[in-house]
Structure formats: C-alpha cells, structure tokens
Amino acid sequence: MSRLIKEYKTINAQDDILLFPETADNLNNWTAMITGPPNTPYEGHDFKLYISIPDAYPNSPPMVKFHREAMPHVNVNYETGEICLDILKGEWSPVYNLLYTVQSIERLLSEPNADSPLNLELGILMREGDKTAYDSLVRYYLQRQK
Amino acid sequence: MEPKESDADERTLHLADAASIVQANQKDTQIENILNEKLTELLTLLKGQLFTNVHTKHISIISKLVYLSLTTLIGRKTLGEEYVDIFIVNKSNKGLVKRYQRLVFVLGYTLGPFLIQKLIKFWKLRNGSGEGDDSDDDSIAADENVISIETIINCLFDIHMLLFYFKGAYYDISRRVSGLRYVTGHRLTNSEKQLKQKNANTYKILGSVLLLQSISTYMPLLKTGSQLLIKKVYTSSGKTLNDSDMLVDKRDKSGSISNVPDDSRSHHFNLSDKDCFKFIPENSRKCILCLSDMTDPSCAPCGHLYCWKCITNWCGEKEDCPLCRQICRPQHVIPLR
Image 1: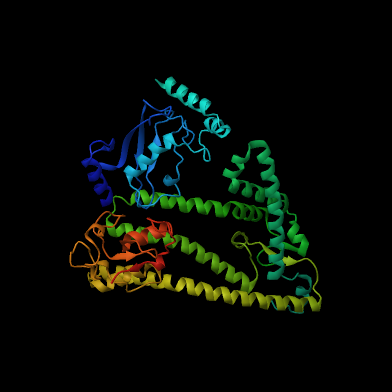
Image 2: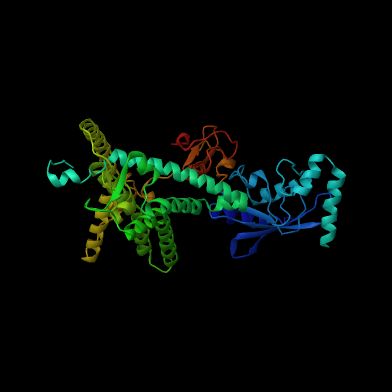
C-alpha cells in the first residue's frame, strides 16, 4: 500500500495530469479524465475512467473501466465500459503504474486493435478495413450522447 | 468371512467380496455417466449451453437420482449388480432391506456430498462474517477450526475406505449408514472361492498402503492439534509460554516447516544505508516495484535488481522478470550478500 502513496505523491506533484483518487482518504478508487487524441473520431471529447485498485496491487493489475455506454471503441464493451487491453490482463507487470496504465488506454484510442474486439459491431467494420464506416459509426455514437 | 459347513450356513448366501462390489460400482458409474451425458445433451438442446454449464453438478445429481430410483429404490438390481451377480441384503445377512433404508441410501448417495459441501460453505461464510468483532486470538482459532472440519471429513472418508479394503463390506459411506450389504446370488465353486480369497488379499495390501499414507498425512495434524491443546491448557492454568515456544507453535501449523526465525530476528540489508553495497550507484538504489530503497537487494537471472520480498512475491504470481520478461523462477532469484 505504501507504493500507492508514493505514486499518489508523484502524480500530485505534476499538475497537468487528470488522475486523482475519488476521495482523499481512500486510495483504492481513482478516476481519470482522458482527452480524445487529435485526428481520431474521439477528438474534442473527454472520457472518464474508473480505476479500482485490488489489494494485491502492484502484483495484480488495477481494474479500469469507462463509464457505461460512453465509449464506442472496438476494444471496449459499450454496455459495460469494460476494456480489453493486454496489460490490464495477462501482460501486466508490476513495473507499470497507474499513470502508465492510463496513458496506455489513451493510446488505445488512437490505435484500436481488431484482434480482440469487445464491440462486435465495430470489430466487424474494422476487420473489413472500412475505416470511414468505423469512424462515422464512432462519431454517431458520440454525437448521440450529447 | 470363514464359511462353516453347517446346515444354516448352507442356505445363507455368501457375502460379496470387495472385488465384485468395486466392479459393480464401476459399471454403475459408467452407466450413470452415460445417463448424465444424455441428459446434458437434451438440456443443451432445450435450454442452451449456458444452462448446462452452470448446472453441471445438479444435472449429475439428477441423473444419479433417476438411475437409482428406477433400480435400487423400487427393489431391482442395478445393471452393475446384475453384471457381477450380487444383490442387496441387510446388515446381518438375514433378509432384504426395508424400503426406507433404500430411500436413505439413494438420497444420501446422490445428495449427500452436495449438501455437505454446501453446509461447509455456509458455515465458513457465517464464521467469516463473525470474525471481524472477535479478538485476534479468537479469529486464529476459528481459522483452524475451519481447516480441521474439512480434514475431519477427509479423515472419516479415509477410515471408511480402509475399513472397506480390509473388511470388504460397504463401498459407500451412504451404504454404510443405511446398512446395505451385498451377497453373491449364486453358490461359489471351490476354485472361485480360492480366487476370491486371493483378491481379498490384494485388497488388504491396497488397504495397508492407504493406511500408511493416511498415517503420514494425519500425524503432523495430530501433533499440531495436541500442541494447540497443550497451549490452551497452559493459558487457562495461568502459565505463559515463552517467546520461542510460541514461535515454533505458529510455524508448525502447516505441519512441515518449523523453527523459522521471526522476521525481526534476521539481518536485513537496507539500501537506505549509504554504506551498504556501495557499488550500487545512487540512482538505482530504489526498487522499481515498491518505489522505496531496496531491502535485501536480490538479482533475477537477467540481472535486474529488486527487493527480495517484492520479486519473490511477484514470481509467485508470474514467473518472469517485471522489467524484461525473461523467465525468472523464484528459486533462481539470488539475494546479494
């Protein structure tokens, strides 16, 4: 647990990072805001991440989710917000920290991976190689939420 | 088991030997499995794969129940019993069993293990929730009770199997409880008798092996149990054990490793001390896993350094180096000295 406190101090020292514990006295639940990367359909949108830290952290990966029905992405389950990312599952290493995890998810937005789809609708479009359709469908979902 | 040549014994049938009981049981299991398979297939068609996956246990119970209700319960032989020509009689081999005994057996055989499992789970859960407000000592004691209730059940099962191998009467605990014995349905020829005697001896050898095995498993447990009892007696009589005795007591719980010194007694190398391992440069004296100055710096086969505790804990999770993912088994981690 002392490792989490150290991470908290480092994160707190930098003020350009939107990653903070939900309440100051409990480091087990965090939230993060990520911005849609430029030149992607997510540009101009902000997304909230919910992070919960298991007791075994850092030997077990943190559990990260988007808000439900908020993230149309091939590797995100739209209904639940669950994320399919290797480092959140079997490829986790205790060397990674919360900041790196959030940055990886941010990177996932610009580099979707068709091999492990959680959103079948988008997965099919991506496998077909229809980038225009993929991007438009994402935009449609994002518009609809507004 | 020695057959006497008197008139009354001429008419009573021979008790079945262990070999044929086991054989009948195997055959029955085989048929139960077939029934189970068919039932699963049917349910998959009707209710879908998910349903059958979730209810595997229940389906197997139901198929067993169906099989035994159609055979034993209504007083017919099961296919396995027919196969080796044995049938059920009561404890004293003086008559057939009553209907309620058969019912007890069928229910015990099918639902028994399932219910016991549920009961243990429930008991554990109740105990677990009550643990919070107990003092530390009490919760440890409760922990041990949970462990011992499972071992007691295992122990009972082993004793039952031992009895079966030596005496060859009841193959199932439920049969023992409801008093269902087996006799052979035909007169034995002399050569058959000899063969059966030989078989019984083989089973006795098997039984002795099992006896040895259970002795070796339960001895350490018994030792721990008796130690705990002694401790309780000591504390109740007002005497206190000295520190080292307590230490041995705690480590002995697992029944294997003892006399491990307490953590505070062993010497640790801590890199917050600047004079410790001077060859490690200033900027790499922190462990990347706990982000603190390393305690007992230890080297993975690839050369990366971590705290001993950090890297061995991680290796229990996954056997690779957190930094470079090369294989790193816990037994290959080398503490620096």
